[in-house]
Image 1: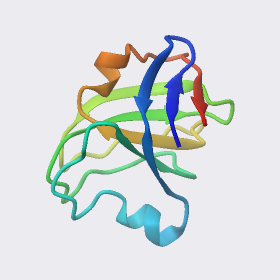
Image 2: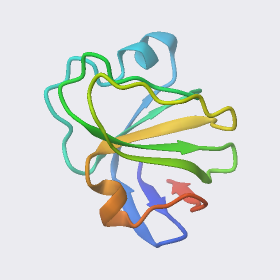
Image 3: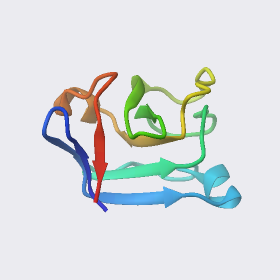
Length: 113
């Protein structure tokens, strides 16, 4: 699967992992040593995340049911907890720098293909 920012015409990831079961959502990126460029993880449903026990920082996008970005969190460091975003249908975790390079911001629409 590929994730594209339709608004900015930029690619966020071309190798996407989907965590949509309770065990996959709980596991997430825990235990991973790094996060390769071009990869992303979608966690659904999801309204908040933590980075407890993670070994690296990540970029995070909170996405609503219409695939619009409702919150952008660049460089979320280990051992942090995000607020709860009730309008969030799912989140996208990506390597640090993707948000900045793709110019992704609140209100952008994403495409998943």
